[in-house]
Length: 335
Image (cartoon, rainbow, N blue to C red):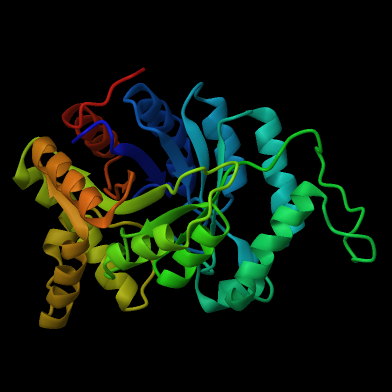
């Protein structure tokens, strides 16, 4: 892979069968440090709620923890689900993170709930149609530029001696891409779970792009599901966990990430085999050189400047090794 295509990490703190969410959270600093040492550009954490297989429910706390465990790598949200929150609260949280870790924080914003309907109701009303207005409110509150007569005039985001970190809009559609472009923000496409081709959305982003202080040029990230191992056979074996997890998710069964052994023992119906086939087409798996080349091809085809790697395997050590092997094959290394 060319060094011109950046590599980054998306972490959700996966909770494996037979382990605990606390153990999954304890793995975050290790992966963040390995990502930094291996030359990855960013380390982002997602927001999910009520999912037994994912422990990243409080990304702001995890961002601070990961940033405190590293020195150079950019750390951020991939993303904050803005309709779950008051924009002022997010502005305060990310101003605070910027104060703690100046010049190293990213604010990725999404419009999905990141959970099931019941948990979404417990988080309070959710209206994705207001997403663009919430982004505008977040920026205006951060800058303190609401005019006289506006209800929010005079509202101060504390700490007020720092700026909001760079904003990235995350999505899988042309609408979110055009919004990111029109506002002069970064854009991330969720190719790790969306079967939609990223090419039209990234083109819409570039076509709508207006330069800004933070982003003088468009910058698109393509997130992909990746599993890298010394052999194709081992990569396939590690991938079995998500085969079964994806089937369970589509069946409405929520649980920890299965072991490969549990997945191998499962008797898949023809319908479930089709679900597995659909997911496998999203995933890039194999040996380091094979994976690096396929990622380079996907980035070039879509017009992305950066690949963000999501690696969901049961064994934390195999997960660390996957990221390390990929970085080596891609020609990355510590600066």
